[in-house]
Amino acid sequence: MRPKRKSTILETGRQRLAGLKKISPKPDFGSSFTEAAYEQEITGFSEDQDSYNGDVAALDHKQNQLNIREQNLADWNQRILAAVKAQFGPDSSQFELVGGTRRSERKKPVKKTTTNG
Image (tube, rainbow, N blue to C red; front, side, top):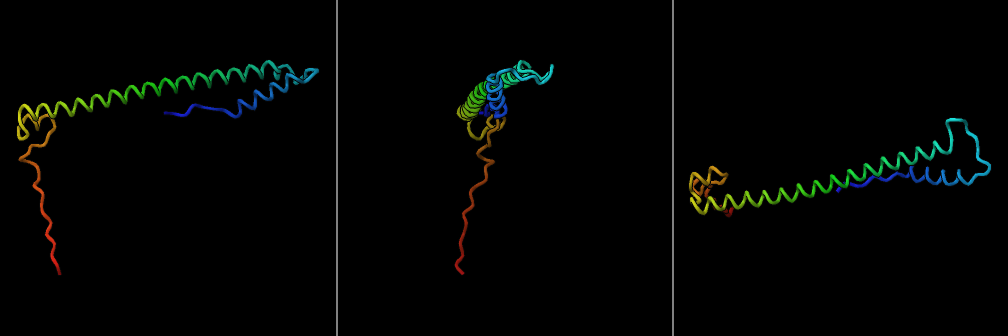
């Protein structure tokens, strides 16, 4: 699960905008540096962040679905191998074709001998 994005800068902007709205009379910072433009910038960023977080949530959901499908496929893989082994035998070439190791090709366990010296 991916973390959702949070912004302390956005929170700072919201607090400053709230404070700016309480100033009377309204300060004049020039024609392009207005309270409305500041509020629009904050709102635009907030909408983009919300959209991003929505995309992250959708991607998490998709990843969860993919993980479930992968587990189902792993189960199928195991069951197919077992079915071929049951039908054709553990030493058959068919068992080897589907990815099993034939019993006759398995290494025999070697006993370790200890010498007292």
